[in-house]
Length: 215
Image 1 (cartoon, rainbow, N blue to C red):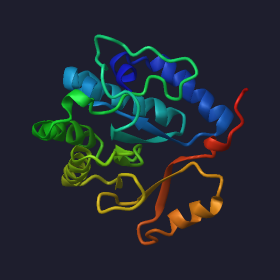
Image 2 (cartoon, rainbow, N blue to C red):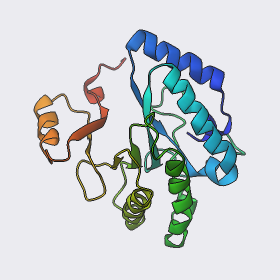
Image 3 (cartoon, rainbow, N blue to C red):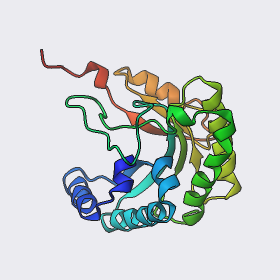
Image 4 (cartoon, one colour):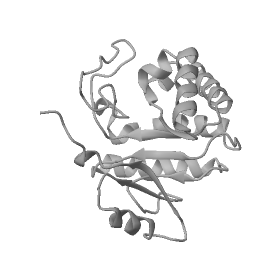
């Protein structure tokens, strides 16, 4: 998500989304943002999101955007040192957001502009399906605070779209935001019943833990 927005290549995205729509009938995407390109090149970052939405609309795809994430590479990510992919590694260029070097309580206010600038530009934009504050936050006090504040910042802008956050149900999500990698499909039903008044979206799903692996 850092290199995509920093080295934005619309011709590549256009080709990929054309194939996704043609061969798989894809109608939505969950797209990760990152504060590093926003901090370094705000206007370019915001312009690239608009350009991305134009390409998505051309192919009948409505994305949702994710701001923060506690998965994978927690340090060493910058615009000056592109992350090299790791062969055979799940999401080998995925970068946690924010990076560990920024995970300090005094830094929390700096992320408000990042969230609100992006949402404000598209708060009434029907091309966007949702705003997701945090993907799989860990149990740290920092992530709990950022998740809570991020939701509040988003709602202050009053977007047309739902503001969501995993895991499952919480006061910081307008929809139950579920992840399920189990082959036990009854567990999927239980997640959809956590809060029927809100409804549920599965932003990650599959049975990859049960997939065959080469010996």
